[in-house]
Image (tube, rainbow, N blue to C red):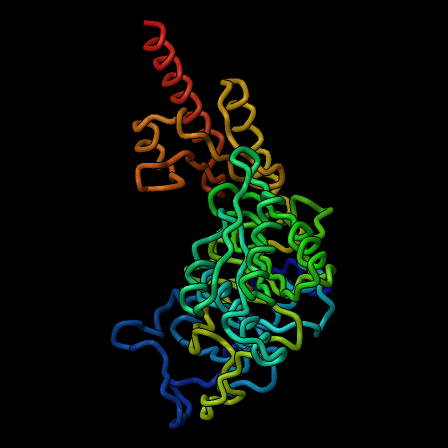
Length: 419
């Protein structure tokens, strides 16, 4: 680990105070040109005693605006202290977690994974149009049917076709034959450039796509593509539970990654992370943002610097070993649940390195759904699955209560069938 370590509460507080000291202080500085300020003092009292021991809350009150991309060119000097905190977060995630070379990437803390995914697709669409002179109609998105809804949302916003690839019902792997047929048919319709989204932990199943499934077929047909990894859910789980993972920047075919800090990392909503290789993000430079120092390369524009500080605090509170230990505990709880489901002969899907167990709906009664707040795959009456996500608050006692009630429900169903 080059950048990630565990540091003490005092060290964390000193680091954040230093960053805030390097930012403009709207309470004391004569900063006349910014359409920004600290949070309203009549509502958010910056003199409250508890704030001195709460660096994240101090940052929220100071209200730094992290507009722009602080790994690329210049940025607004008024917030240079907390911008450096954001760069430290990106170094940890890009280099230490996803194995990029230092200074080989760009990125930013986005307002959620949805925006980060749209940012990737917007960037690649413009790359193909700017660098390869493609037309809009020649570009298509490829992603599985289990992919997050941000991908069809991006297709709609950016006016691109989405090739939705079916997956196997039980093991949730991509249907390779359907993928190749879809690509062949798209090629016949004039598609020449493809934006691939591979999942590291699908929302419903925690399934992991194999990027090589896409790579091999696209290269077989001599087609140009860019590959994005949607690790919004799995990015803070899979690289730690599967040390042999090759889904990272050591794979030269992977050009960008999305991670959500407000899921597994338990950062405030919305806190996504977008990371891409150098030489790409400038394709979404908004030249018209002339009053912004460094201009803007993000979809959202203005964004909270406090979210970057929150992610930094979490990462440096745990350190890499503390985080691995946390993930190992969640894995053990997930394995315990799966052992109980096996004993009850209940059909479910679980990616071995993830902390989600998704149970076929036929085993789940409405009473179980209500009592344990289970999430269905679909709310339209055609649901086939319910998922259980083993987050930090989900302990063995909760899982034991669920499996006990599930066993009772199954016994009652069998009695009805026998009668």
